[in-house]
Length: 148
Image (cartoon, rainbow, N blue to C red; front, side, top):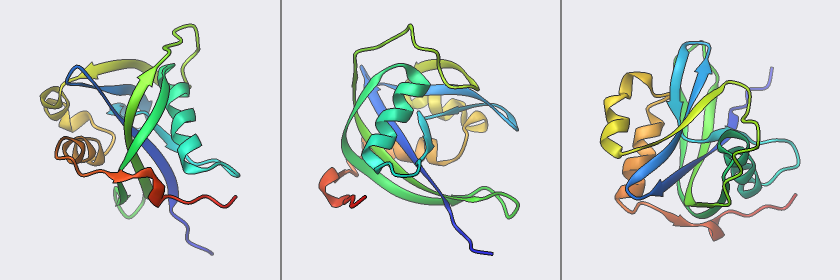
């Protein structure tokens, strides 16, 4: 058997000192996460994060920087995730769009409100990338190359 991590993308989106999170139904109950999801076949990473933000929040997202690349595994029974986290701006909200299955609501939360929900975060990466973003730990998008 060939081992492969699940490649995912996530978006750190700040507006007026609040961050856009989704509240979603998971196998462990309700959780809060950045708009995020899996890279699809024949899709580059930038388009993946734009698509995921639109599908989960009904906002158009323009990535500006890479916040980081994280490798995470919840426990031995769970898959390993390779997560590309971006920051950027949203525009053109389209509230008429249906959100992805499992998305209960979107929320604009302060960093402290996110920290207060630490037991309800989808992973520790949620708060970690917010803190990285707030500490200006970002990288130019030009470090990503797509040859598909």
